[in-house]
Image (cartoon, rainbow, N blue to C red; front, side, top):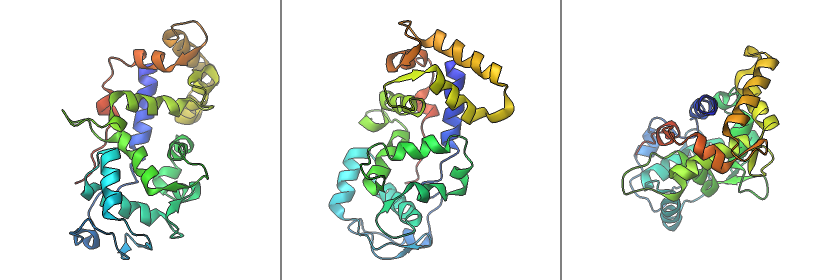
Length: 231
């Protein structure tokens, strides 16, 4: 049961793949140096920020993204930064049409603000979240895109109150977000109850992270939670 629910939420996040450019713009393809992202019109937005070479190196070390990928993501980030202030608000994310109509929009946006202290997201935080969705490559695993971190990211999508467990009400809340009125309330209640019973190994009526990992141990998490980022 939990496998099917997880698959649905994974699809919802994949459909929100609107944070990185799918094609290289003519302006960005002309940038040959990684030293600076200068004041250019990038994807329709003028950025007053500079992306320094050392910042690119730090982000590469933290996330595993290549310098080219970092520049592409920076291009997308600046296009979302309508106020040209170097950070994104929740409203900036919600202006993305494909994300605004996503059933898990609220949880997806929330995931970008998990490390924020001022309800703003800077570029480094932006890339750290997206790094969870880098494909895992042999001998090149980065901590943020390891199987455990992918699972932890998915787990937090369900853990609405951040208490390190998924309760019946939290699971029901996510189910309602995903399926809306397509399933009756009685059916949703039944699915939530059965999922808790199947996954909860200690009888506390909640799903712990260990329970979550055990329930998904035969699931190809690495594939379901990976998105191809252009080089």
